[in-house]
Image (tube, rainbow, N blue to C red; front, side, top):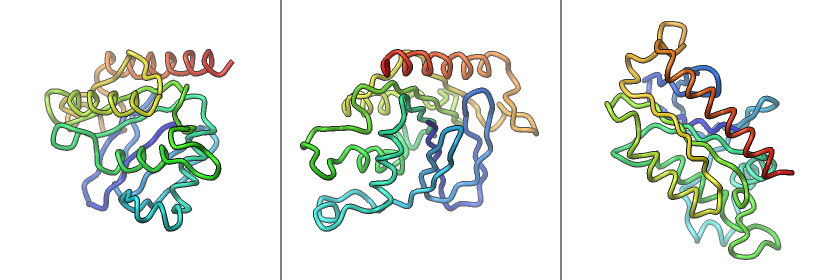
Length: 189
């Protein structure tokens, strides 16, 4: 499961995905998908008032997509030393109980393996944001694997075709994705 963040600017971003770099044009949506699907979710900002009225259909769909996965891969840019507000909002909506679930059911995350990756124009590669993301995902009961990928100086890290120029980060992407798949399979069995 990969989660890409899109924002409505004309700036093109490159994010890291298992085994390759993927160029994204931001559009303020959460894009979740695995090899079989690519689903867009327009989510309102989380609010207890909205939740108590009618749980947003896109939030419920996103939660079902997350819940159906054995593992979750989160790839996020760093926003002012933290996670993207769009990603945090998506995590919050997917963590909320629906139907007959108890208040802390956390069915989208509990017992699932998760991996985290970031590409950033900063020399830190999004490290500060991944520290927060690891903490957030652990709080919602996801098992975040120790491996993580940071791509510093992302504006210069990719060639014209979108591939990483340096073999080391490319191999780390593959290694982390394989580790996620292995841990997710072990937890699911």
